[in-house]
Image (cartoon, rainbow, N blue to C red; front, side, top):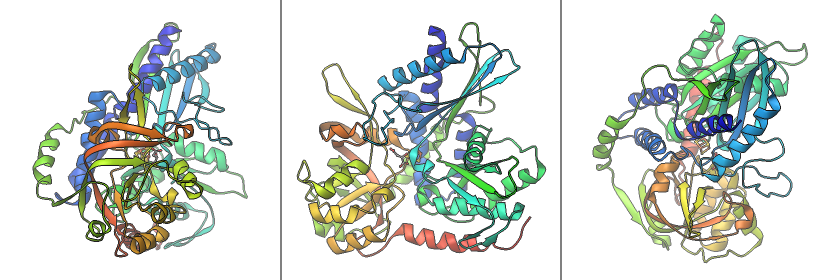
Amino acid sequence: MQTLEKSLYNLITETSTNLPKDVRRAIKKAKEAENAGTRAAMSLDTISNNIIMAEDNVSPICQDTGLPTFKIYTPVGVNQLEIKEAIKKAIVETSADAKLRPNAVDSLTGANSGNNLGDGLPVMKFEQWENDYITIKLILKGGGCENKNIQYSLPCEIDGLGRAGRDLDGIRKCILHSVYQAQGQGCSAGFIGVGIGGDRSSGYDLAKEQLFRHVEDTNPNSDLAKLEEYVVKTANTFGIGTMGFGGEATLLGCKIGVMHRIPASFYVSVAYNCWAYRRMAVDINPQTGEIINWHYQEGEKITFKEDEVAATTEDTTTDVVELTAPITEEQIRALKVGDVVSITGRMYTGRDAIHHHLMSHDAPVDLNGQVIYHCGPVMAKDAEGNWTVKAAGPTTSIREEPYQGDIMKKFGIRAVIGKGGMGPKTLAALEEHGGVYLNAIGGAAQYYADCIKGVDGVDLMEFGVPEAMWHLNVEKFTAVVTMDSHGNSLHADVDKSSLEKLALHAERVF
Ligand SMILES: O=C(O)C[C@H](O)C(=O)O
Ligand code: SF4
């Protein structure tokens, strides 16, 4: 049993820190499709640097280590309860070692269990099979991309594409729309798993099951193989691009599964996965608990090392605005969409719980002229009780849309950093108050952790590690202005132009 626990520890660590070979190759292809010097190309450079850093540091690729979901296949006679116990122990150990962020939150009280165990967590699905070995698959799918999952009930009306009927062409319209509606918020360029048929829950299960397929495989159903190819090709004409910055690479993979349905229901369920597509699988000897085989090991392993050199030389051509908090209104008004800023000094993390709290409470620190970072980091405490940041990329900002403008005005905050952009309410507040929205690269948690030179304090720890307000001391934290104080939003522009591109595909194809 001890050996099984160790094998599971390795599986979880590997999944969180070392992106599989097929996913790396897809990212490399995306990089090659972008034009040098564009925002998309720079973002992909950051992403690939981050992939290397995570592997070298054996630390999470992204700070959101998601909802651990295990799919376990066992020979007849293997004790599944023992496997469950071993999984739970390995989850606790990897959480303690900062390979996973404490992500299990009581839905009613908001309390974080601190060790990733909770009611229904981790998710474990068992199946028996005739093979004489155990296979354990694991996916760590983060919350931002999970929030972009979507389910269609056919027939329906779809934005830009019109009526989607109960046939292959209706399915095609749903899938194209699913990519459009995700924009950059699920950390594009992403991968989608699609489930056709079933009911609402089995449809999503089938969609998620597709995410365990190999990126480069071919669907055995020739109609679906054609549809998969069509979707990837067409979605990449939408111009959403990496992080929604615009660009050539929007979708890196599409895998479609089908099951029967009942006459009255026809669901198309789409599971959207970010570029940080962390899934792995191992075969295990049921007698010893040892790993006998790792999956997804075929083909070349991209290390991105050569590209790294190219990226550094190109970066020097971009003008960078240096900022240190407290920032004045005048400095903010001088910024416009497209500017790259580099922040040195203090910033405070604040995400869902903090924004909700600040609406009706005073801030624990003076936020006048300060920078708020939408981030829920992975933290570790050393022997002396000092905190260090293990992973710290941005979270999806749109969740703070109901609060952000009011909070900025109430406390005098000048800049917020996050990813995926914000909506019209925040844009109006930025203009009125003199604020700016800065987009960091989602998932680049090692890259940003490296810019954080120290943790100067923490408030509101009762909200749990990801939701607390961390006082960070940063050096050269780089982000792009995507919403400025003059009413401009790159996100609104990309949304509008991608909807126009989507609408070009209303005619029947299948
Ligand atoms: O929870 C997080 O840190 C990020 C989340 O995965 C997101 O994409 O918003
Ligand atoms: S921040 Fe982005 S990369 Fe990380 S889990 Fe969320 S969607 Fe995925």
